[in-house]
Length: 320
Image (cartoon, rainbow, N blue to C red; front, side, top):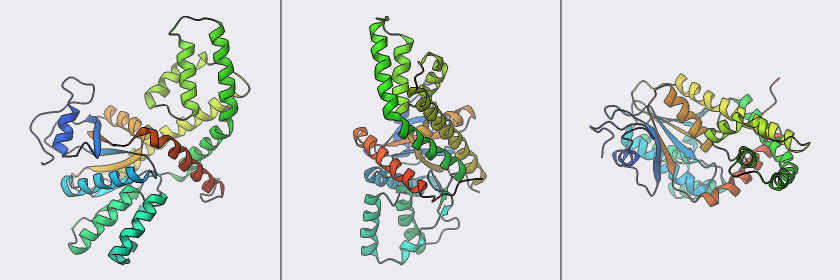
């Protein structure tokens, strides 16, 4: 089924919204990913962007992301894919020199190790197609990170991690005090404490973080809780700056054709960027790979710890 249709499909939450219809038009199997948000008022032209929500270095998710990227190349004419966590254009041509059987085994091992992402996996497959029949406009992978912002974000993550355990103990004490006051339910303090706990685990969505900021003065201050909250606020502040930087970086590399661009980013970035694009009136579709969420949290913690350890060894030099 082609990308174009005849009936307008409005944004999620708007009157006439029909994400299932977008799913059908895009011919994306719901066993691979689901359309979870969209701003695509007209089917007469492709959307400007596809945002693929990533779970970084999760092997199964990377295979699904690779499938979506190849599908985008084959059916939507996508030529440019942009990645969180990378700083420069990515050249995968070295894999072309590896014999087919060895290449498949190597790619599988690298994906399982978390060393090869879904977009990179897709690029290797697409590259083999293009090698046989070179197109006028080849497929390209781009990193869209700013090294300074990325480093600040990882430093903020490290601070949250270092302060979190003691802060959570103080949060338990605050909850006990709150319960002893027998406040009517629901109440603002209880909601805000729930948000703080989620924030310290870095699990807030952009809308939940905005709700937290609206009532941040309601959170009690303690010697352990306050610095941890400040570190978490810095983490989210820089995440939002990165989301904005991603969109500026993508805008600098506008393709000559009208083909959409694919952006592969984590969940918080996905929601924030969708909000920014909606405010700007840009068309987009969000695709969320189908994965058991219970598998993702421990893996996220593990991968972020690995990343922070690497940066602690000065892989990315400090900016002066």
